[in-house]
Image (cartoon, rainbow, N blue to C red; front, side):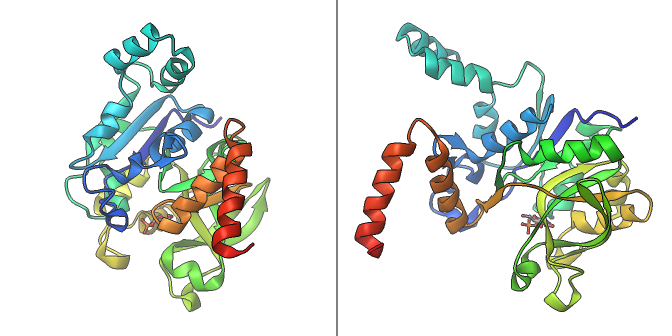
Amino acid sequence: MTRKIKKAVFPVAGLGTRFLPATKAVPKEMLTIVDRPVIQLAVDEAREAGIEHLIFVTGRNKGVIEDHFDKQYELEDTLRRRNKMAELAVLEADLPGAGQASFTRQQEPLGLGHAVWCARELVGNEPFALLLPDMFIHASPGCLSQMMNVYNAYGGNVIAVEEVPEDQVYKYGVVGRGETAGAGFHVTSMVEKPKVEDAPSNLIISGRYILQPEIFDLLDKQTAGAGGEIQLTDSMLSLLGQQDFFGLKFEGTTYDCGDKVGFLSANVALGLSRDDISPKFRAALKAILDEKCGL
Ligand code: G1P
């Protein structure tokens, strides 16, 4: 029997320097893809996969994320009085239940491994999901739901992976592929931001994880790795000696919203797939492409 995954961790302490000046006062996770903040889309994916408790690892100037996941009495009252019931229904559906969102702070930017370690007391001694919100994964069912199928069948730890061109592996964590296990495969090795000649494959870690709590004991002692940061991948590699890790090449498309082109592409892709705006947006986009690109 595998233990049910009830909690998800969202590291949201990053500064978002690549989006200045937009991110001077607004956290990068609150930038929107159409009309939903990037962090909301990650939360949507987690809730679809059955997650009950949301744990945010925030930092300075990120208070608005906490407000976003709270009730807004005045706004809701105004919407009710103006009979804006559709808008109100969206806010009500998105609101986490009382006590189902927790916030802690990463006090220093020491790396992803350190951010995850900061959630150890809130996660406790149970397996958990980890979603890096910058990586927006457009998929149905969602990427974490697809991973849950592997976890429910095999237990252990599960990492979502995807293929990238070989000259891109240096930007990511990379896994080695072993024997097939259902829809997934056994992970044989992991390395963070390798040179292309040291990469075990071109399968990169896509920012979605299901992890056993023993990862925290390893993060406790983890020394700095690639880029001088405490790397989650290094602790996962240590855990790989003790527990099973499965990789899943999920069905879906990833948009790296920490990057301007990825962020704009996510907006176009989601805009084109939204029934409420798609016909008008398609026509507008076509006109822009005709004018600017002669397509
Ligand atoms: C982090 C992880 C890396 C993963 C990547 C996905 O790197 O350390 O293993 O492939 O996220 O976005 P970062 O983007 O924080 O450098």
